[in-house]
Image 1 (cartoon, rainbow, N blue to C red):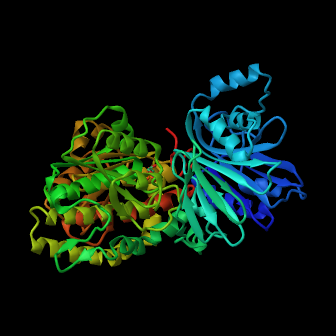
Image 2: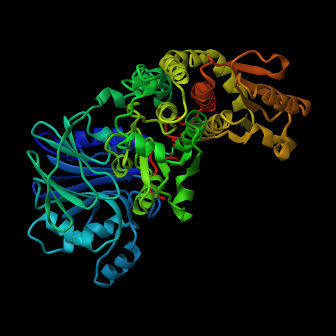
Image 3: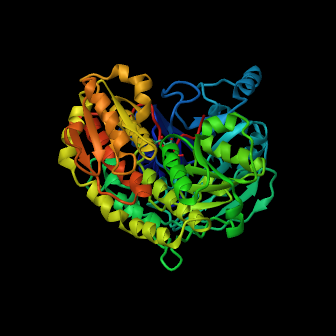
Length: 604
Ligand code: F6R
């Protein structure tokens, strides 16, 4: 989705901005642009296509010590040079880059048109440039403030004024804006990735806040001009966290990082003395945690499937009824918010619009929400009452892998913690603790068989379609396996609870339609084997992900190390990520930026 970066300082802004744009590429975009001020003149260069095309076509004389830039993911108007940001007013004085959506833009555009304003794009953002330029205010921040009071919608914006070339004005309402503090230079961005090279500290704007940023300082205030006080935090990630290293794709790098990511999610949280998990950020007392009668998990996409894995763990370890639901469904069905339900919002980015809206809806109605979030300081992390950070490190591949796995690990910790406050005995607590401690090594083992998986992936890639099946704990694993395959290889895959096959989908079974079956060595093994029989007897072929050999019932087999039954789903999904990756590679797909997808879905 869209990305913002801005720079003010002593260096030439153009290379800094281009590098920032390149670091935002992972979010998905279709056009990019840059604006700088030099000698009192605003210069803009923008175009549809990739950042490298923008850089290659950059006029030589374009330079300046202040500038803003943007990667756009089309919402209002198709991807084109004209619709790319930055957008300027008619006098070419004000430039604006914008993430989000102005809801009443059509109406306001008509009004401005009637007053003689000519628009040169179809975007809602251009409206902001005209509105700001038309304000007769003492300074740029006040002009932006007054313009923003006239619009409704979600925005993160950065504004440049050719007559005030020492500053950038920022504003946030529902879309993240960060200030990066460097050495005699300041940056701003919608995402930490664009700040890491030049900033040492970071400040998050709150909704309803504006900021004026110069090379040496910044100030913040609310939309009604009340100054606010901000605390800068040290930037934890390094520039290398946002680079591919020796890997061909971020997806492969992040798949391979999972043993370390699991370790980071577990670090400092295993309490051997009390046979429980130590979770410092829940902000709920033991008494409050015991009083909950239900857990309801809300999330989207892969985070939802991690939530389904988590709900299973909560139910079996803490013996508390738990279910997971799409945040997009939840937010629109006027759900009954119960005081005795603990709500858990799961999100890698912490910016997913539907999940954030669901959290706000729960909070409005007095429910308690915990976050299971990867990006520190993100909107969801700040909107919840408490939670568990994943510490998985930045995830740049559109297809979530290490964050998904860390989410399931975080749920295992939460389930253990809640379980030990309820009926889970110390022996079971110890059993899970020691299994959790072994997970990083077992994950490395589960991810070792690259050559074998490459061959299996070539087979899957040659199919038109495939089924992924699993039972109870295996079902969310199947859902996530199918999701990964679809999103990066574009091979159609459908996940079913194994027992559902005979209620319809068996009609499709044929030698041309492979089935990937999740077959853990647990109390449901016999049942799962019966499903494989049914597939075979209809001429279907099976790739089983299992803990042991399955004889002729599996035409192909991926062996995964065994953990405790409750934790098995964490490991069973790992080879399916590699299966999807290598299927996509075999088909020559754009693996890190699959078509039509964006990393963090900040619009509906
Ligand atoms: C799939 C994927 C998406 C995300 C979903 C939620 O690989 O990445 O399905 O899981 O868009 O995103 P977050 O976790 O950022 O809320």
